[in-house]
Length: 367
Image (cartoon, rainbow, N blue to C red; front, side, top):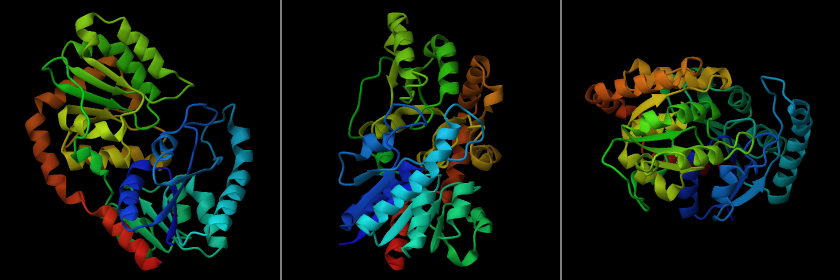
């Protein structure tokens, strides 16, 4: 039986690879967070997505070196050795043939344990500018799959394979729908799987203004620390009836619905993670990017800058984000729609539709 451990901080490319591995009869274990954020009781999207699937979910509680000191910092430090011991236990118990990591601090203890047990490791780097975790992991990896040609310079040349970034197949197919209430342009607002509290606050402030001209699909995330979803549901209930019908709110957009959302969204307002940027290029969607200001080594700012340099998106830095600047940027996108779509077409060379197959080929060659 072929067994693989998959871990890391990026669920959507992992899902694309998992789909291919399942067809090839691999026995898959996913090591990830059960809870969304440090000290938060909300369940993580990886747990909610994978717990009832054909994948065996193994919860891993791992601390990390935080950039700011919070109430949970010391607690998080103590969890670092616990995460390593737990990862080592899983590796000894299940003995996978190979590890596939998708970056992030969650992958580090699994990779270190695999190195001790002489289990080969492959890592995938989605971003233009690698974070600290993948720079460390690359030292122990047999192969490093990368999404962008320019990322080669950060890793040992003999280990690098350019595969592209896996994009989930759901964004290209419609398996579920819901009715729109108007013929107004649709805006999809998302902060990723965890949501984005700063973006949610601005949407709350500008909601009636936006709904007067747009229909909105809003993914708030499910963090219990901020309670954005329940607060925005209350905000929706206070809207005039005609506007209320134009506001569609979700904690998380399920995979069965994401293809419908991508097809009909005129504009996507989002963070600038590597996966959503790849999806924007693949689906050729107008986008307003609000990069996470404290992402590792400024990787989200680099992703956003890449699209802006190609005149293929608008960008607002979080320090400049207001209700007014949000609406101005959205208007700018609509005014420049044709030119932006032309630029997105030229970026097609950066989208590799077979990235997940290439990664699986690397896995099989190493095994």
